[in-house]
Length: 418
Image (cartoon, rainbow, N blue to C red):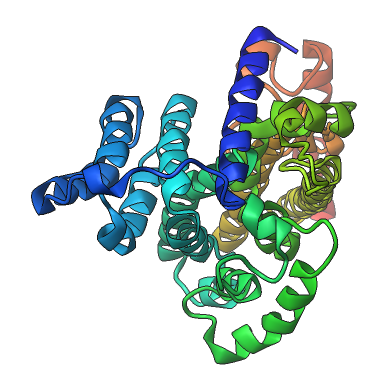
């Protein structure tokens, strides 16, 4: 383990102890009599939360958390903080934002942290396949890009909150902390804003069953919502890659890494005296790792299926071109779409493999699968070059003369016999 990872784990341990103490009501309380109640200062604080929670703005926000009353403005601070989190991109920005969240959590663990988590979950619904299928291709691509752009920072923020102990109160109390219905929050996360009452009813019982399971944690539930129903289309593979790349060292997600030692390194500070559950458990690490690896396996299987389909399509079109001398534009367009889909999935699979420390799968080159026909849609019929540069399609002049210098029978046979 390198020095930067050790420092990160030490920092997380300090945050975990402070945040778990806040969940348990053991955090030192501020003297409310000396806090500032100025409305303009509170408005400015909310604006700064919305605009910049990175290193540049975090220092001032941390000072103001200790100086302002804030109680009457928590309901406005929650959406402002969530908007600020969505603007974070780098690890340093997320680290600074978690420091601000921890400071607010120390003062308002129920009033602030619980609604923040619930609102964050609502931002992480999986895509609705039926809705996407009804859209034109261009609009579908735009909507998916917008969804991924919105969800990427939120998923990273929820993951960092989990490591810092900001979700411990919800994980340690399966029924929900502070009156929150965690099962309802997960149901909203799964069905999305357009899921409707039937979708909520369908998933509500399952969500209640899930949150009551021993060892359940919010982060595992979020990943299950995003990935378990996405094993056929892999629309969220970019989210899985971003998550694995950022938290591989923290959760032992790579191949051959030991979840128990990793969890011990991160959660050493959370071994509570009264036997409470740790912030980051080895079981949660193993479940997250198994979920990501299973999702990757399904993506690789789909990649192989698309690859085999592409080989068959090319062979079919080459055979049609050989027999009939033409391939319709519609067939060419279909082949092009299939090729682009395979290339996109292959790139995504390669990135996820890299994030998990695995070698990308090797696929047979479709161009060499059946190269003996040597037929292409444009250009010369000889694979790999110009006919003139290699003497045409003949091996030598003698072979060319044999096939091209044909005897004209009309010069040898009387016309009456022809």
